[in-house]
Length: 428
Image (cartoon, rainbow, N blue to C red; front, side, top):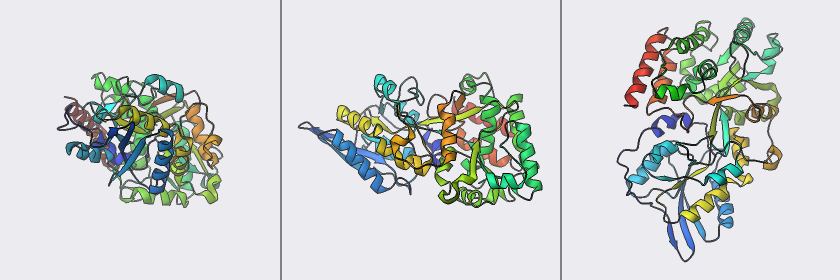
């Protein structure tokens, strides 16, 4: 399970290599003896995933593993990777860690992989977030990053009967909305990760959709951001800006305010990760729909990120107990309810329907989840993957900065060259 609402803010830091981590590091948590064990578990708290949620979920998993006592540690900020590094540096690396970036810690020898047969048995996409062939976080849930959410009432007022399927239709929809006096697209440009969503959607549709291995090829030096096809995709974003399809002062709108602007009907469309589904107003949920960033030919490209629950320390003094607890927690359907309803996460357990999670979700959630279950072209969501397609250290921040800069600059070639330089520097 992964809480994604502010994950972009910590991904860039989380993808950096651990400095000073040693294979000799010891866990600061587990104490094992007489058949029992006390484990430390790094979690986090949000309005959706409250202290009560964690306490209940931990208690339920403890019952499934006799002899285990779990001590909860709460990260003081959204950057769980940074906090875990601090704990490791002081010899207190937790036995279990929720929603961290595996690559950061695997390279330091700090995580224990799950048994692949257990993963294969229980999850829809067993290798969805595998890193270097191993699964360090069970692939319990997924997100589409971004989707395009839209206000059906505002569409109807502008004479738009259906969401667009091609890029040309998308531009036509934007023009009609603007002509009707409605701001076509909401942009929380004041927060870097939020500012990057439209550009990320376009690049996923046009670049990764045609070449799903593009990120791996970038690692191999076979493609670049400065390539003509990438620049052509970025030019589409510039078209949206120059046609004034975003609200005035979009770079000053904070992420939280962008949600309020869209849900209150000030704007017609919102390009955001599928976690927005947790913010759809319950009293008029039927006013909202969703579609994917359109491609030129109308083909569907799903920018996909598979998340998971907890990682297991390779240094824990009680590996069997830690593994048993992690597996029990990860398979408990009760734990999914808060994430599905509050954060719009798509569950990825085998042989489970939504009804099995006892959730109350909107039709737009069900329609969006269908993209996950259907056979279609899924690509790694740019900057959000925790598998082998995760970008190198610093690239998320560089991409966010380029997204903000391109809101007011036509220098596409220059910004793409900066990204190439940042990538090359990070992978030397």
